[in-house]
Image (cartoon, rainbow, N blue to C red; front, top):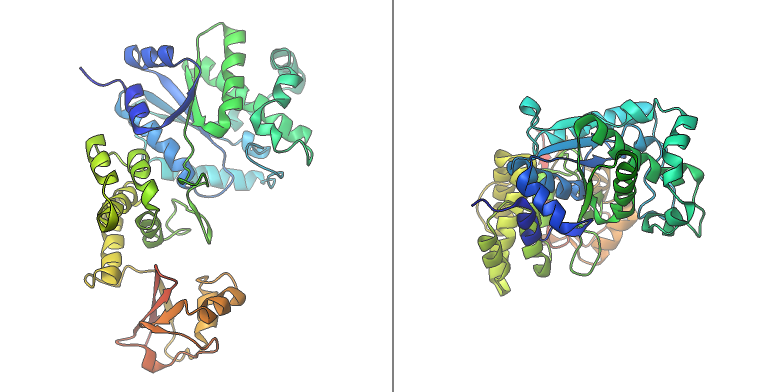
Amino acid sequence: MATNVFDVLKERGYIAQCTNEEEVRSLLENEQVTFYIGFDPTADSLHVGHFLGLMVMSHLQRAGHRPVCLVGGGTGTVGDPSGRTDMRKMLTDEDIEHNCNQFKKQMARFIDFSDGKALMVNNGDWLRKLNYIDLLREVGPHFTVNRMLAAECYKNRMEKGLTFLEFNYMIMQSYDFLELHRRFNLKLEMGGDDQWSNIIGGVELTRRITGDAVYGLTFTLLTKSDGQKMGKTAGGALWLDKDKTSTYDFYQYWRNVDDADVKKCLSLLTFLPMEEVRRLGSLEGQEINEAKKVLAYEVTKLVHGQAEADKAKEAAEALFGGGGSSENMPTIELKASDDRRLLDVLVEAEVFASKGEGRRLIQQNGLSLNDVKVSDVDYVLSAADFKDGEAIVKKGKKKFYRLIRNV
């Protein structure tokens, strides 16, 4: 007998909260369920936090259920206050449309949209057409201000001031569930655990207006063992777009996760069988590095494809294992006559966010050129630094860059 996908999600550690565990499990056992997760287009790429949601969607689709990927062309005009201490930047309609289109391209790597197996829907299609008074009369009586103010998503904003604009976000997201239920007989909304208040709002609104049984489920947030959000880098978020986070840097992020986080990441971010996850997660000492290599390769393969994962792995082995090729490292191209300060070159290439950051690292002996520590902040590159037109810069313990000098 096939395993219920609810049990799969539970075993792998995805499920945080559920409106009714027994009923949701039974629903997934006995029906082909249409469900949705929403993605607000706050940037032109999905990041690793979204990736967790895509993994949940993929598990359910593999079990025969139908995902609806909802991009927030409507809710994106307001901005979700969940987990925020300040108001989000207002996006233009052009920004929102561009970002939604980028999301669609990335999601297609994880979700099969052929033959109606999954749907891509934009909530701008209905939210932008709503009549304000009609919305108030239909939806308003089902929300109490007291209950809304008690929601976790608004608590961080109460001291600094919660705008009426953001206060409407829960109502808009709740209306999405109602609209999707009417259009597609959708019965389940899922999202990160910080969305629990908004999801409950949609479940209750849809039940009260239609009388139908609908459900909500949240999955665990991607956090480190110390409770901090995973996927934050010195340069910002860990993006799924390789133009924003290079495939090599993406691979290296997972290669360097804390030992305590390896098992959790293997469980949530790969499709490896749980027996293998447990085996790899139980390794200790130097052996845990083998598990990290598997993690880095599997996650990179899912996000960027096998060919890109192979390149990233080969580049890493060139640096750490003494074999392979340096060709797949992040590369900085210079002209033949480019005799500039190394610091200026690295700041221009955004290896350092500022000259101050670069100076500090050099003063702390944290920068090497061709395995030699750079001690002079004013060190000027010359032809002697390039062997066969190539030089290798090491930033800190684990970041490597290839300098190419074009003849």
